[in-house]
Structures are given as C-alpha cells and as structure tokens.
Length: 320
Ligand SMILES: [Zn+2]
Image (cartoon, rainbow, N blue to C red):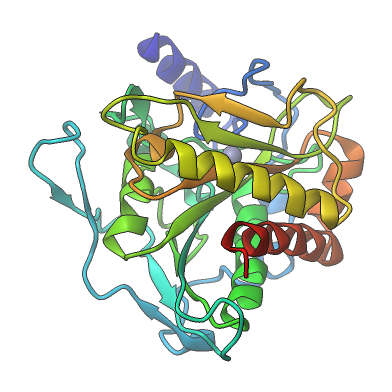
C-alpha cells in the first residue's frame, strides 16, 4: 500500500518536476483524495506576491518571534523508542511572545501550518515512512487551487494572521515551522505532533486547505478517534476543541463543508494528532479546488477572514 502510494508520487514528480501533487492533507481525504494533473507549478506566482511572510528566515526579532531554544525531539522509529533530534533540513519551530496583555494571557498555544513549499522538491525525503500510530509518509506536498496557489503558502499566511490575533490577546504562540521555502521540507508529521507538549502548549490547531471535489466548498474539522496508547489522553479534549472550532468558523461566516456529511470528521489516521499529547485538531479551512473557496484563499481579506474564524474558535475553546 505505502509502496504504491510512494511510487505514484515519485512517478508524478518524475514526469512533471515541482508539480504540486494534490492531497488533502497529511492524510488522504475521507471522501478519497482528488488527484489532478492540471496543477501549475508555483513559479506561476511571483514570490513577492504569494510569499510575503516566507522569503527566507524569519528574523529572530520579527514581531517578537524567537527560535524555540531546545530543539524538540520525536520518535521516528516507534512511539517509545529512542528519540532523534529535529532534522536540520526542516524549518525550525518558532515561538512568539505576547505583544499585549489580554484574555489569553498565560496561555501557550501551538499552531501548525500544514506542509511546506519545499516538500515538492524533496519528494524522496517526504515519502520516507515512519510509525505514527500507523505507517505514514513524513509529509505530503499538499494541494493547490486550480490556479496553482499552493496550500503550503496559504496555511503559512493564515497561521501568521492567526498568530498576530492571539499574541495581541496575551497568548504565547508556538508555530511548528518558521518559513515556507523551497530549501526546506517538513517537518515530518510525527515531529509536528510531538512539539506542543514539549513546548508546554495547552492545545494545537493544525491549519490546512482541503483538496476536495470542486463542486463542494466549505470547512471541516478532523478530530481524533479513541486510540489506546495514542489518543486516549487527548480524545476528550480534542473533541471539545473540534466543536469550538466549528462554532468559531461558523460565527465568522465561513461555510461548513458541503461535500462531507459531517463537519467534524473523527479519524484514526492522522499522524500528528496521534503523536500529540495535548488536545489537537486539524481544520481543513476551505476547499482549494472549489472556485469560490479558491478566491477566498488567494485574497488577503479572505485569509484574514479564515484567521478570524479560527481565532473565534480558539476563544470559544478557552472560554475566555
Ligand atoms: Zn493539507
């Protein structure tokens, strides 16, 4: 199974270098991943236009951000085996201090912008498999809009916007990757999941854009199924977080998924959630293959609206 999947990605990559291979997230979409050959390369968009926050390293003083001082460790060979250091080829996790006191003062919140723009040029590395409650690849390229705007760039920008809202209310925000560049790839999903508890975060929100059927639009939230040894410690908290995120997104005027029967998808196959030790959900914020949602993803105002919905969900979860 995994050899077939990896082989397919490698084949696509060999035919069209740097193409964005459609995939909803780190895991297949529950309705079946939509694969397309029509995605253009990211070079169709000038770097300055789509990577305003992603060109090169984030300065350590950038809006209060600083490198997480101790590189987090994770378990590439099994949940309880010897740990390994954060891979130097990955973006680094970064922590943002509060800019003001507010209703979130004292809270540490982890945010995970899905994928990395460099995944597409590191296919063999991201296709390496690891045990994360199931055998999964390190990461995937993510999806893109039909015009070629990549999910990795979208998620990075939405998380930057969300993080600004949170630190202005007193939160400390840990982000799993500090850049969105072709020189880096990952981090692997297991490391993303291991990060929040190591950095003392209360919970983690993973931000993605789905690659669903073009006829449907809207957001959905992935929450963990009960999985002894993996999610038994975070199952209840994650369910509460998922419900709060749905409520927040709806309150911001963002539509629920029209192509899934349930807005909350309970799954056992998401590696980062399986490896996390704090309540964690994945928000598939919109469907990048749908024209209306793609227009939202590609506009700054649209991404701000998504960030506002996520922010509202976090406020609801914290009850502050
Ligand atoms: Zn994704």
